[in-house]
Length: 191
Ligand code: GAR
Image 1 (cartoon, rainbow, N blue to C red):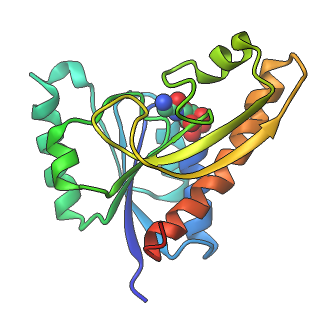
Image 2 (image 1 turned 120 degrees about the vertical axis):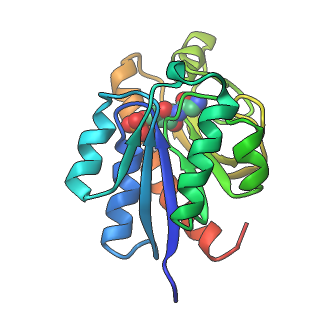
């Protein structure tokens, strides 16, 4: 069966990118990452991409006139590489109409909370402050809203301690296997 062609979009450390890249490399996912897109030149994910030999494109959104302008460029790059799915992996930016219309139901995101609770950039901290005891991660199709769109998979972590770093690591571990599961669902159209 032909390998599915993925683009991963990331802004930061890239542990989810790496989890996907490892799963592609060892055959747990019948896919390859054909492009890593990063909106933060200098982000650690770019180093990780080098290690895996993934082509990367880093850009500074401030150098473009609008979201539409940089997304039009990205759409061309994605089309040229025959991308089937876009996986947002810590991409801290709203996706606009240009990509959403071109890749309808083909853009997915991962978020470190049990959505629809605790959207946004500080989900784990916000949940801790709220007194949550069951944390988790969610994968979902992407729409034009922040961390919005139909849920695909969720994983839960029961945690009653007070070490946010330990909790973050537990959630990241869940995320890494969750994303592999979700991509397999996309490839097999079982969602
Ligand atoms: C992950 O926890 C991901 O769920 C989160 O950013 C982190 C990226 O980590 N995404 C969001 O909060 C989206 N709203 P990573 O760079 O190590 O993959």
